[in-house]
Length: 328
Ligand code: SF4
Image (cartoon, rainbow, N blue to C red; front, side):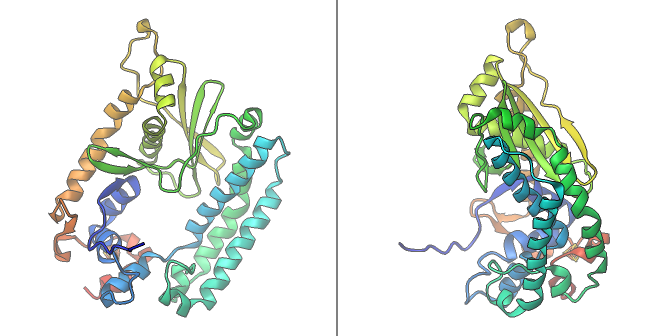
């Protein structure tokens, strides 16, 4: 099998990409363009460095990943009818995984620099920053996040579902829209008693883009599974989104768009067209903003780095790309 090296990445849109651009265009450039092909041994140094920095992580991010892993374990157990694990058990496993990541970061500097995608590396350790704030935050959040996860309303419904109602969410869940790949993977999706539940776990602060993120995930489900889109169009499938702020133990429902179909016509639930109407403007506006920074939109070739504004803010303290940004 031949392995093709593409000089530029494929263009796509996601809300996380949009957030990165809105926070700082220069960080967006490093993440999505400069680091491309940085895994190749003969790539230019600046490309390899940008790629490597883009692989740094934090305890906050790792806790988010662990919540996702624990949720999948709890889902699998609930579907078999097993009793829920205790919060202490979940916390124990989470802390064990995070300790392992910590140890790997301390011992893995050389391995990380050789193969950044294979070794977990914490930004704070890699950049010799004060790790205390991060570890304090983790210690405050680890226990409550597991309690909050177990307290959500999903497990009883999944126990009732058994093997039914699976909505598989692949790692890079996306769908084509207007010739663009849109990525929008929910953390959990399933159907129970005529309701499609679409959920995202959150371990950080609330922000105004998160409800839109869940709307996009509901849209993904209907674009990906025609049988769900058909049921929604017939009015036999209700769609409910939620943001689960597990540390705070709070659920925020996310309402689907109002159906354009009158209740008099029979269908009252939001349809695929309703989601397209509600969400495509967000995607189109973001795509236009991103394309304005391209020299060649066909091949996704970016403008010169100077066109990507350095938007300095309080976030610079936690920016993975600070070492390259400081050099101009
Ligand atoms: S250090 Fe600040 S200005 Fe530089 S890329 Fe990061 S967020 Fe942007």
